[in-house]
Amino acid sequence: MKHVYDDGGRAAAGYKGKAGDCVCRAVAIASGLPYRAVYEVLARETGNQRATKRAAKRSRSARNGVNVKRKWFKNYMQSLGFVWTPTMQIGSGCKVHLHDGELPTGRLVVSVSGHHTAVINGVIHDTYDPQRATIICENGVERIARRCVYGYWRQECETSRDITSPANKARFAKLSKTIGPI
Image (cartoon, rainbow, N blue to C red; front, side):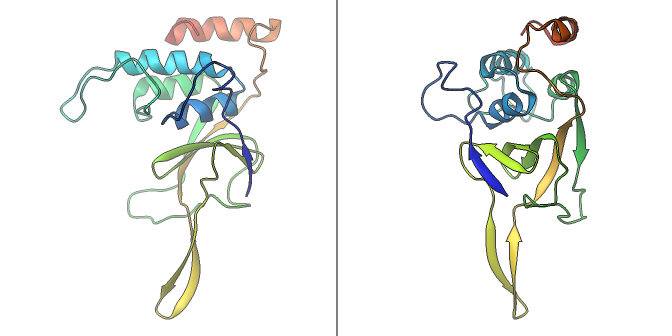
C-alpha cells in the first residue's frame, strides 16, 4: 500500500514532540475532524474512565493511548458515522492484512497489533509506514508474512472538514449531547 506522511493536524494544533496518540491521529484523519477536537473528546473520556481490577485510573490525556474497547469509544466512533468490522476471531487466524486490495475503499481507522492507522481509499495516512513484510521459511518454503488487521472502523457517511457548516451543525449538536461538547 502507498503511504503518505500525515500527523492528522497534531503540529498545526500546537502539540509538540512524539506521542503514542495513534488512535487520536487516525480518527482525526479518517473523520476529517480537527485534531484538537478529537483529542479533547478522547482525553476527557479517558480521564472519566473508572479504575478496574486490571487497569488503574488514567489521566485526562489521549497522548499515551486510548482504550478502544470501552463503550464510550465505540459510541463516539458510531456518532461520527463509523461502523466496526472485525476481521479476525479467536482461533481463526489472520484473514485480512495491511496490504493492497485486502481492505475496502473509503475512510477507515484500521486496528493492527499495537497500533491504529488511517487508510483512505487504499492509501495509509500516518506518521510512519505501519506495514510489515517479513520473509519467513516454513517447511522449506519461503513466504511473505504481512501485518494482520484485527478489524477496522469504516465511515458510512462522508464528513466535511468544516464542523461549522450548515450541513453539519445539527449532526454535531446531536454529537455534543451524546458525548459532550467537541
